[in-house]
Image 1 (cartoon, helix red, strand yellow):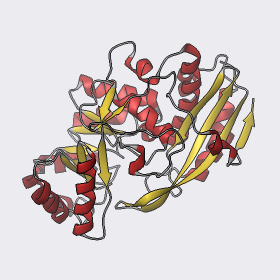
Image 2 (cartoon, rainbow, N blue to C red; image 1 turned 90 degrees about the vertical axis):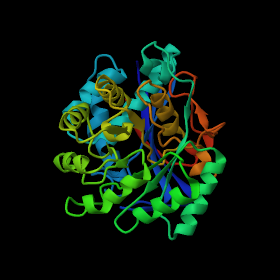
Image 3 (spheres, rainbow, N blue to C red; image 1 turned 90 degrees about the horizontal axis):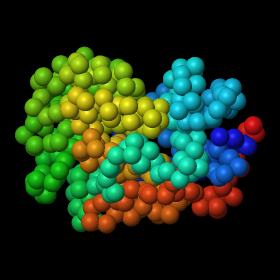
Length: 369
């Protein structure tokens, strides 16, 4: 595949409401879009790094630097450019999975458009996959229980199949109790984003066992697999790992240590969709269910995530919300939920492109080949 140039577009979308987690409150979605232009068409990828290094070590301006100075130059050395070859070449650069994922996805999008293959078909390897996936919603930390219950009520009325509550010390048992008492046996899970310590986690989270939760996601720090394994022995609720899993090797280690009964796969966190597929396969071989996590993606990242979620071991509902969950106007045609499900794109590549106005309104960084 021949590349004419690569463009990096910074876009900002206001959220319909602030989204608060244990580590940050977001009012806007700042995203870096990577466009790979070829003679046969343009491929797109989305970098999910945040503006500051609070979720991971990566941050938006840093990914631009890594892409320009290190990752994109590696592509010029390849005799034949493909997503698979790029993924191998990127191993020369330590870390920076979100930057790698964005560039690899853009290459893969262009590559699959040329062959007329959808991302879902490519990831499934010619085997059957879902044509639509169930939609779940992540609910941020709220100023009051009343506002939380109003929000959950609205999402359930809209048809969402699973509710995830963000928690932190002091906002954990009571929000869960309130949701259970009001809405009964709705599929429910919680996500701490590493907000607890080994000292306080068991005492704080053990009371959640009475609420029949699907899982407790990432209660401890991302580098504390032993702590998660120990905590798993003390809780009846299953532990899911998110930030701790950055590679297939991490998944193998966590499974062998019994630190995770479930794994959340975020393609940006693990370095792209090829790595995400490898983790999916490892977990399937070990009978560990997985689901697709969200990073407030625009339509570009959401389209690719839907394709990933169509694979067979994504047995749990992911953070795959309709576009209007976060944005009044997305940068692509919006994804709409019908009967609690969202259709997997079927067009070649990731199946969507940003509106022309998105690229016209930005001043891209252009790297020519």
